[in-house]
Image (cartoon, rainbow, N blue to C red; front, side, top):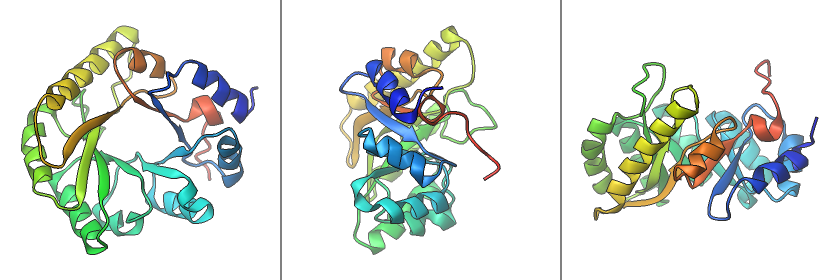
Length: 221
């Protein structure tokens, strides 16, 4: 079995310079993160607010923390000033809570809009047809900046992966051509351990790799 450092070196061989690699460290202990940190990883992804906050307190500002899991409104207050990018904004109510909590501390929240591109009931995210309406809400914010889009695509073969990645890139491109207030298509966050190479080929510039770096997850923690 390869070490974390070796996994990172191997992954980086497939990832161009302009693509941000996020090491998904959810459920992983501090020593694993330290090993990745020593291999020059600075972007880490967490699913749960509590875990992100605990790890933030250990590493401080030297690491860019990405919240990639579903964010509950009552947890927003705990991540103000601690999160580099919230990937999973999926409702107007959540947007308003982020605006309120970050505004109270005079801090800007950088977010991605999560699109439910496969319209899967088991996944959160905004449907493509509701995106325009949602972005109008973003334009009214003072403390939220939209930095792009995120998606978790349906599981499938290479052909279906490409189909959904292409759809996401098309939406991202079309938003890129428009002028919005507070909205800038800087990041297209898509692709995980099993499909990140395809995602990059289809235009992703931010990939989230957990198992490919840290090995299989331990959910008994």
